[in-house]
Image (cartoon, rainbow, N blue to C red; front, side, top):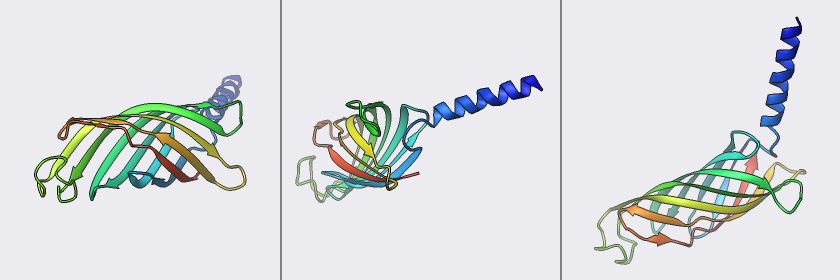
Length: 158
């Protein structure tokens, strides 16, 4: 009986620690040079995965990020975060204005991303708002640096 009680206490403590962040999952909109959807899911108190589905230049980019969150400015529910990940993007070439080569030629790019941001989760409503900078480097396809990946994200949090 003692073993069962001790095991239950240990499991309860581990579960409590793993859910210490302000929310477990958030789904919402991302507005900036790349507009789209964002889904962020925490695996513990600090680590999270974020999936971004965005559009720009009549193309589509899928980005996956691993992020680490920390409390910011000693303020409850305000966090700063950093992370890294990768992206894959697809364009038909009609709206790239000859920057990437011949107009009308389809393009696919693959690259790596970084992210640095700040977010706040409200207590009154299940909403999270964040601002970030997400630079990217394309490795395959149009080899270039995208420095303008900043955005404002608004998520419904669970």
